[in-house]
Length: 398
Ligand SMILES: *Cc1c(COP(=O)(O)O)cnc(C)c1O
Image 1 (spheres, protein in one colour):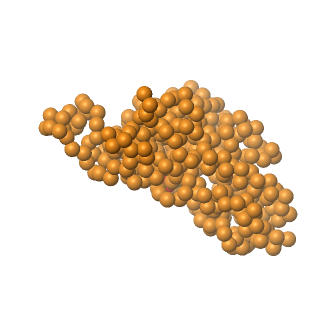
Image 2 (spheres, rainbow, N blue to C red):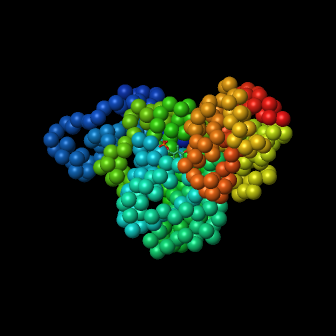
Image 3 (spheres, helix red, strand yellow):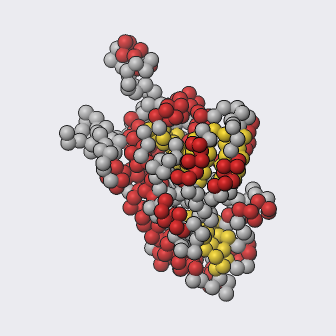
């Protein structure tokens, strides 16, 4: 049958990103429609009863059944190679819903130390309050992961590559460790997206997204998603349905359209980031560049095998500490000074005083967050313009 209501699993990722998930309505629309409706109506009292009772599939209420949101969910599930996806109101809501669904008081999480700041607060402050303990380990140190696991560990949680030093963990090996101890492995795939990394194919059980970043890719909306097997995702769905951190149909439409260009954008992001990393390495004012696409990166080989690209977030250290780093940031005229990433616009930030400002001096040192470190999330402007904007401040340092 010639229509796009079913997605063919044999399609290449570029095709899935454009065609998967849309179930064309009787209006025969070509583009994916937005359904801005809170509820749905029934032909009879009996039909309403069947749909409410879950005996008959169909739309009930947009907190848990909205066709536009479902289009996004099916498309992202197809791209990640998962059985099911549940969309959420933000990336944080995706992590919250996952842990609420799968863990209970007394259970433990083992997580990588270099996590997104709000994830650490969620784990320590809020799950801590509910009796769920999180232990943190060095991302790339597999024996540390294994040593931190106890009989109560239910979830291993990692962000790979890490922000902003591009450290990488072997997902296949970590999944093996998790499963040997009866735990699940969740990977926050925000930095690479399914265009560059497929954690489920490597053995991960759950993939977490902040759709706010590259899935939209243009800085327009906040959203999130969880992808995995039906079994666990049914539980996550239950949390979203009951607790309410659902995605709006308008945002789902933005993310669905964002996915259509994901593969192209990610390739262009990687090309710009690689070119910038190589140029930064040659600048006299730069002491060190952290990017897994560089042959000197300690995990370059693992990143090359595990990923289809090295992403677009890089760190570099200038000589002269905080003063020098701030002067480079303040000398830019085009780059946006902001902690956000995953946008077509290049952003620049000083991790030690912003994204990692809450860490103690000892924690910063352990995490490699020096005062001279600058993070750039490389966008899609012309590479010459990005280089020129950084050159002004870097040249002034020598
Ligand atoms: C931004 C981000 C989140 C949180 O996502 P929101 O959409 O801002 O709630 C989680 N993990 C990573 C790696 C992020 O970059």
